[in-house]
Image 1 (tube, rainbow, N blue to C red):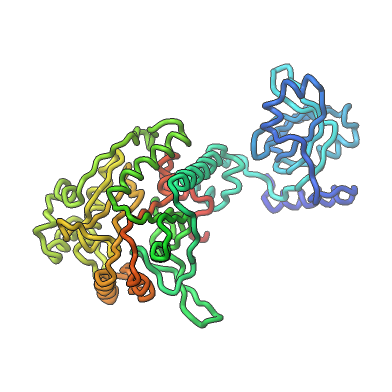
Image 2 (image 1 turned 90 degrees about the vertical axis):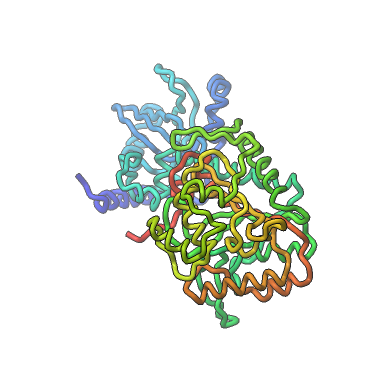
Length: 487
């Protein structure tokens, strides 16, 4: 059996033959009269009229029967059979095709549509042209590839061979489109904020560092757009949103990728309770418009998104699944409990961060139906307001579905003095070794002192949402080019 290198040499020889015969193997111009899906949809009329059409696509299969050859070609919209007949094309032209065209080549076919005796819709070729000669052969058994990571590394082959993979990315695009449509109907303005930032903020995460030569200054890839979007609230915009790539220098697993897509929006003169109602409406609109129903199946189980969704306090969840009473336990005692439960803690974690680690391991995985987990302990989110009636708890929530944390949202802290105090606490954690602590952003604090209206803010991972709605186990299945360790 020939090696890949040997097969490539054979194809290079065929390329030379094509060019020597005076044909272009990679022409500048090409024309088609129909996409394959359109030709199939209009098949009855076109075949009755015996009208010549031009189709383009990649050769996916080939069967030779003496003076006749059957191919299947596929474009981005569908697949159709092509019939090459020696006595129609001429012996010389027909043999030239057999000798120099391979599975994987992109070609143009001109001809008339008809049905075979077996009823298969087909185009009979009266002419053909090379559009791109493939120099590497397509793998024969890509669908059942045991090294799944190879499919992610060579996504282009994954898309060629697996229509269900391509379908997931089409659904992803529809989901983002529907989110945009919903927010714009609600009066939100789409904006863009810096990806390169002089100080990273808006989330707890390790940043990627870089250097801006012209100013000789350290820069960071954003971990969140939050602090810039809030500056726009200060400037007078009342409803703003951004969908874009974020970058966090963290671990890679089924729910994390170093660069990912996130939606954040901010709504002036609203609070976290308003956001919960808006979130239910957003999901209802999204599910109906993309899937036509309010339920999906994920890993064999049904999830119903019909509102209203249950709301449960963070402290209640911790007590339910671990018997720990967060309101009565000291930080050091909680750290010991966490270690006893098998949780490895980073240096410098505060009480709220330790409670969050317990929650992520023992509580969140047990939540299946859409649930708002509300009122996390003070310290969990340095940018969120505390409840007026219970200042030890935050005016915030997470939406959890099938164990996935889909989004974080809260009433935004707009007191500049309290915000400065929170940033100082975070700086203390950072110096004690907690690398994901938020940093002091003096420019943001100055902006806050000019007055930011009360507001509610929302941040949702698009990749996790798509995972859930397309029944995908890992982010790598729905990120076109996930971050991979080099081979």
